[in-house]
Length: 170
Image 1 (cartoon, one colour):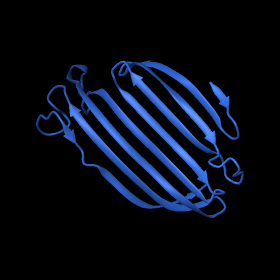
Image 2 (tube, one colour; image 1 turned 90 degrees about the horizontal axis):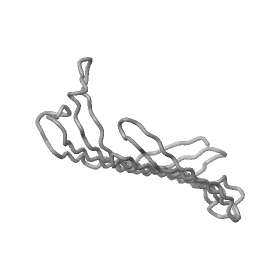
Image 3 (cartoon, one colour; image 1 turned 60 degrees about the horizontal axis):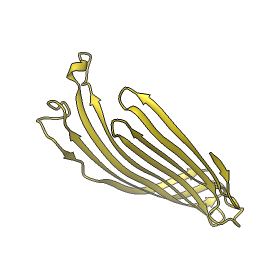
Image 4 (cartoon, helix red, strand yellow; image 1 turned 135 degrees about the vertical axis):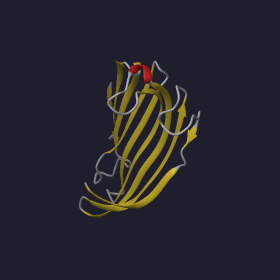
């Protein structure tokens, strides 16, 4: 589905469905939008967002949002990536002697945000700051764990975050 909206908005959406042995049946969609933050701002490139959503028969979920926004005559650029994953998978072990019978079922959840704000300093040249935040959660519910010493049912990783300088040629 594609639609051309008023002014400078363009929107497209596509369904998706697939099958894999790990996920079984998966369904979801992709949505894209292209637009100008200020319709009268013809000096800026089109901004965009992209959303991917997937849900599987094994109750796995993946949501992923990307964005790139140009503003104020393209003096400013904001890019970002927001992710949430919640899935179960089999771990078959390490090395050449792994077997199907030795597999373990585990569950993993992750949420993360990475975004950058840039200021244009010359044509197609931007400097700015990047920030990221990641939270992961690992839940074991299979056989004796091969992921670490001992048996545990839940492991939360501490939030991982950082900020730094960034440079981009566009």
